[in-house]
Length: 293
Image (cartoon, rainbow, N blue to C red; front, side, top):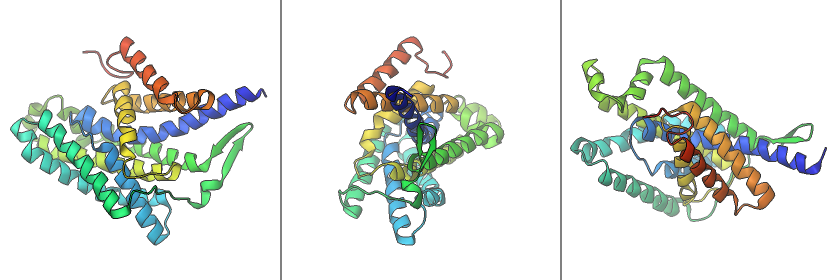
């Protein structure tokens, strides 16, 4: 097979695996930003915090980092509930969530980054599970388990979230709360309670994405800043509250970014990926799966 074609195919496959990780990170934001209309700028920082706790617990107990990511998700769910409680009490119920609420999440982001530096130092952290150096081969295509296993975990989490939002009453209420909170009150459903649960879910997803991230690449306390643009771009491009759109946008974003880095160098990949985002929004402002106003 032509070497350039082999390189292209492997770049596409690696991009799809990377896109699975992006999907896990962006799906939590699709809940908080797309469904709840909460601009949680601290979402990537919470993801990095999840990565560091996975490193701490995994190193101490000798557990698989992906297993730790799943086991710690309930704790991050409770953390998300607590963060939303503060946000609602001081900003949302006063109608000051626009600017002051955004500043609040900026503060949360910087507190997390400073706390990680103080607790772990500024050095990069990384975990090598037993399968990290195993690569499956399908003809000329390589499937490194270091990327495949986190991608499968991310897709499983996204699939369970999709089923929960579609098949349960609480999930349907989460999808509806930002559109018509008064209608929920008429059905004897407390919108604040629904938002609290949904925000907890979004933070739990961030922690799972962080656990997947630390298997794929090293992380440091400021790594969240690298992902802010990516996760918001994927969320917007996918259609804000659409999980299928979020998944497809994440996969496409990962492929465009990885193929560009393969053939033209890493410095070009963000420019091309975000340029492609602008092109999509120019022709479809509501995103790939968003509904036109």
